[in-house]
Length: 170
Picture (cartoon, rainbow, N blue to C red):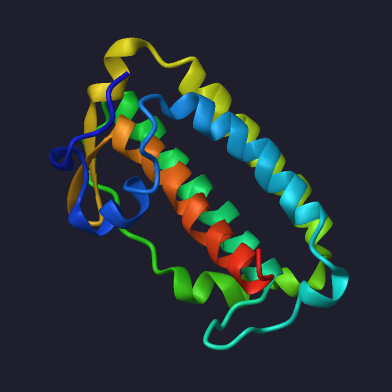
């Protein structure tokens, strides 16, 4: 499977998609599942709700955001892959985090949920027919391919987990 070209996603997503140079996104999604889960389980409890300036979200909140975004992006991929041409709205991540109340549960609970969501995402993409990867749809007033969404999911996680690692000095 080729990497998505810039016509397959809005410029906004380049930040994320550029973080995935690999030619096949499926092994990336699988390896991130294991690597991210292991990393999250090693975060000291004292760091889970600590804010590190200039960041405004805790580790738990960042992981909640990753989970929410993956669900939304995977939903978009389902719609696009099935040929649904109905334009989808964007989502404003800002209000999701406080309403999600992610700090009420330990990071390990969110790590479990991340693993479940990622497994579902992987199975969906593994079961797609080859023709579905090129299908496109519109979300946030921009056209995107199913392949672009998959790479966006992987890159979005790499982006945020990279920041979390930096916050721990890793």
